[in-house]
Image (cartoon, rainbow, N blue to C red):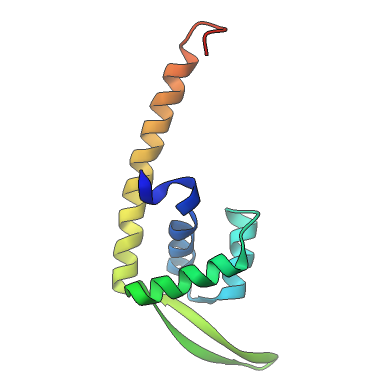
Length: 113
């Protein structure tokens, strides 16, 4: 469960958002807030993106903006798509494990939980 522990959930979320479409960091932070993680630290998002780039999971390029400074835009690589597929498999297994655990807890007599 290590890589999909709640403290690491940012990684699969970012991979999914980048699979949906390439984006710059601020866009990713906004989409994380609205979809998955309310209290996302923007610094953590940028650190994770840099880590992804070092690992070959994303590529980045500078894109000029008509209404502001240039922004670094991130896109998923083939290795990033494979990493997302692996994350999905791991999360599905984790979901099954947690569901089974909660069902067994629910079957316990009242007061013994």
